[in-house]
Image 1 (tube, rainbow, N blue to C red):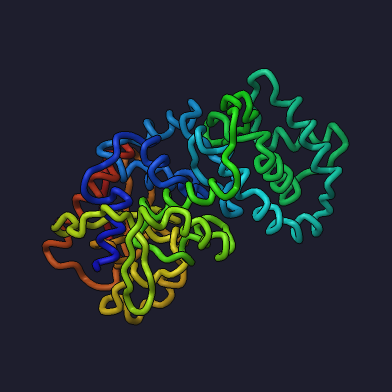
Image 2: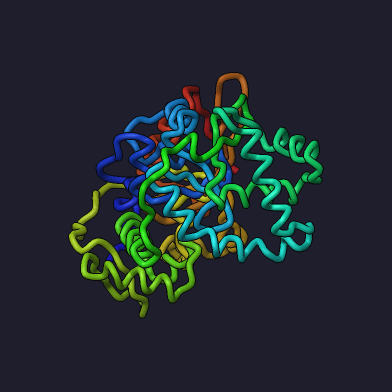
Length: 358
């Protein structure tokens, strides 16, 4: 099985694109959004012609939310999913945060007090930046800057109190979750939620291993296995190099042909969503490039599902300049595919694009 190609298709990076940014987030379940600007490009690539402005509008209007969920980092999620995803993953994220909370002297009473302050500051449709919330906490007698402030806002997110509000220029704001998302009458029980998340993951990210699912979802391997077992009859599996990969049972074995290159943003789901990164690399083209392989937090260039280098960008005077670092020189077919990827990135930004190699 050509795992890299299958993942491209299942993540809608090739084949039929998804209709809009909300459809992308719904299909993937959650999209890592630690780096806000690049994450918007990751969403847009899975649609037909979505612009940066359209993704931004979906976030400003609350059709997509950004919050800490699954793992202790930001993700894009949909309003319809945020409450059950928080209920499922918040205990593990809090456990991860606990030693860091102790370092900055965050006790349960401080968390509780801060959340009363947040609720009052954001009531009646108000939005505030993290810095503004820090000032409000200080006025209420709670010292909160740097990591301490970040953790107090994270605790409020994990408690389903606050979530992302509309951007204010280049700054993110917070809003009350209950005012941004209608309260639901029922949140799935934990076992049901594990199955829902497993199905979402293996359909959209497969072929993938259970360890990949555990990493992506922030679950123990035991919980990941339980989630997989509850939906296993809807999945198929294949063994490759002694590893078992799961995917949709009705998944077509053929994938779209042709050479395709993607300029993927940092932390894109095609790479970050897996614990085992082996299928994302072709050893014939990556030999001698260990430093790039070890740092998957940068923008990457992908050809037919395999990482072939990295890229950076510079924006100035209405033009984006993309600087490439490739493992090897591309052949003419690869160069054409790269130019198509660059053109699409320029359309997303609504600007011109230039390409340089280093």
